[in-house]
Length: 215
Ligand code: VGL
Ligand code: ZN
Image 1 (tube, rainbow, N blue to C red):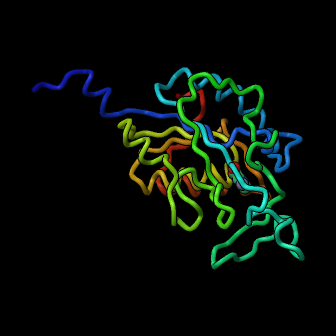
Image 2 (cartoon, rainbow, N blue to C red):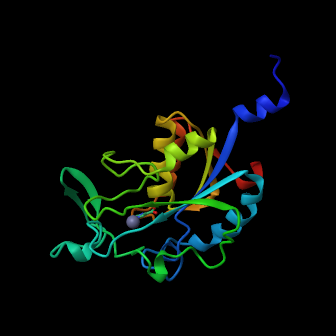
């Protein structure tokens, strides 16, 4: 059968992935990312360009192993080894059902067809929206994208140097064509320059770094 233009559209299905646009990652939040709220208008604008829009939520139980309060004697933002996996000790954030775990109030939720929850297991952190940090368990995201026939993922959100980065790296490994919308991301910058480093690491493995105006 001859190929029609419809076939062409079918073979390059795209999805927009909005990473962790939650109160706790915005100014005044528990793990505030500088200018985190400034990416929300970009998310609102970009949504209309995509047939599929998926959002993630960092969604921790209050006794989560990434919270410094659950490690007496250790310091905030300290890097420890937890069951052989590196773990930064964060302030308690995105506790399930808390105000801080809600989407930022200016995020327009219309068009978000699916929410993926991560970091739900108290024993292991999960930066990537695909897998936990040890790649032991996956979320629903990969299966969901496969079921839609999505092959290209456009990623933006918080934070550049953690959840955006690890999501993009996993997406490349899983075989997706991956775009990261740089002006739609902001970094934690636990160490100065971390966000820029994350951008180069992503670029090095084949992620295309673009701006929202290019979408
Ligand atoms: C994140 C640190 C801890 C993120 C989540 O969304 O980038 N960072 N939990
Ligand atoms: Zn977290």
